[in-house]
Length: 43
Image 1 (cartoon, one colour):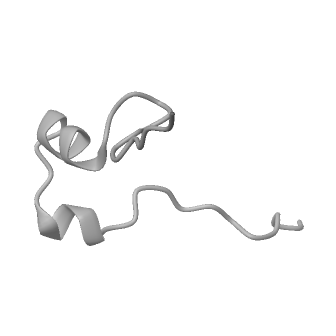
Image 2 (cartoon, rainbow, N blue to C red):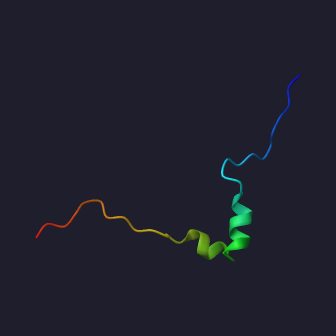
Image 3 (tube, rainbow, N blue to C red):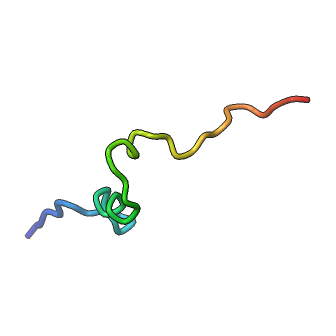
């Protein structure tokens, strides 16, 4: 006997739930939320 799980999300929420929770629209979803430097600055 087998079964199929169609919408399993390991951390408990899917993308639509996060968009609703944080009131994000399409324009917000295209923005970067974090900027990481690729190398450290040298003085």
